[in-house]
Length: 85
Image (tube, rainbow, N blue to C red; front, side, top):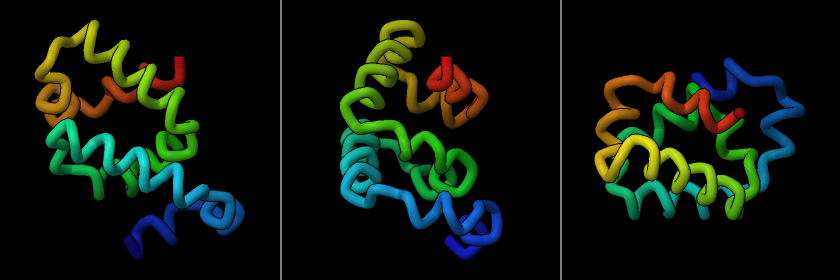
């Protein structure tokens, strides 16, 4: 996690809603995602998306890419860019 502190502005880190972050982490664990730490380090801004909106966007990606979305994201994290569209 130290990489996260170095990578992001202090103001960003201070504004993280830990309940929201925890809820998203639990959601992703439920999807059997085993690279959540990497996501937090490289895509922290995903965890700033309100939980309900995050789940809706994830479900849309799952519709598009199928039930093996986690595996596809593991192979190509650029898929996560679609969260910002």
